[in-house]
Length: 400
Ligand code: MEV
Image 1 (cartoon, rainbow, N blue to C red):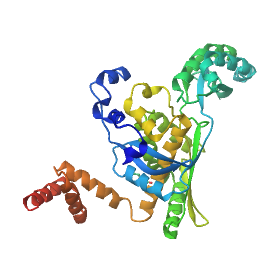
Image 2 (tube, protein in one colour):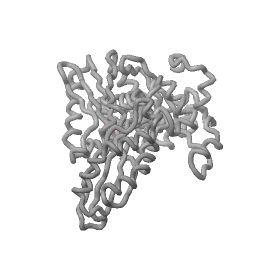
Image 3 (cartoon, rainbow, N blue to C red):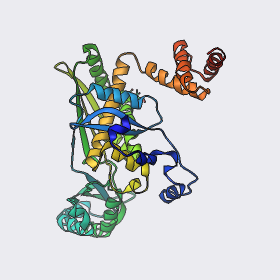
């Protein structure tokens, strides 16, 4: 049914068969390949994002992420999730060390900013044709001499990467400019690499849950305030957001480590680790807002070679990077809502345990309708263990 809704031809779905990534292709992606590693690939439903129905592809090993986000997305209808993306600007860093006079070095670099930007633009003419390219250049002083590295400056090159995640693009530009930057600053070139703190490339996602039980509404808002007050809680709150975000990123072949690194640095940008999403009880509705950096691409990267990742984009109807960020962000806000509702009401374990019981039943050898029957007995007795599952299964098989 889900696949019918996607309108994607059945034969295309072979792209999610376990053998869809041939070992020769995998061997071309990374080194020392000995096989492929499979994860469940699922579709979360009920999502309305910026007014359109979206099937949300997810690759994840954790039970209940898909069901819980689909459930939360249903609660957020009919308005669904609305999103706003900044321009897809990434930051490249060029470090300059051993600068004797850092003030003069920084001044000279600022004076040369336009000319350096012109150099950078000449290196990426095709990006400029697509409306992107280098858009800014600035300098910060990191250390004054004396010190192990002498005076240290860092130049930031800001690059609008359009639909690319942009790592290769930005790294190439930084490497190309580094010698000239160091010469102008009066020092030696150090590292030249993008920053994963992509705080200029953020997505904001909002949703509104009407008709929520007033007690649940108040409890979710209170859970949000807990995360706003306490980094220990904020970390787990954000983990719940990343359950949805990472599942989408993994399914769509993105560099999820980059997004993870950026998300947590962004969460700590004020000096205190804070939640990426907050919830308020506003005039009878529960209103959620997520703001986070989400550097993703719909061209380049693993998408060249990974058939399931390309299919995932097609399933979600994603044709540009902003939309992919919107889908991942909406999934994150949905998994956050689902977790907070469960925690604030019955606790997380009951739902988790019911799903876990099915896994344990299967692992004990149950098939067909025996999976649900064994799982139901396991949940009812509260002892969700393999030994118990085997006993129940043996009994049910003896007297069906
Ligand atoms: C578990 O994967 C995620 C939660 O811990 C998130 C949260 O506590 O908000 C349930």
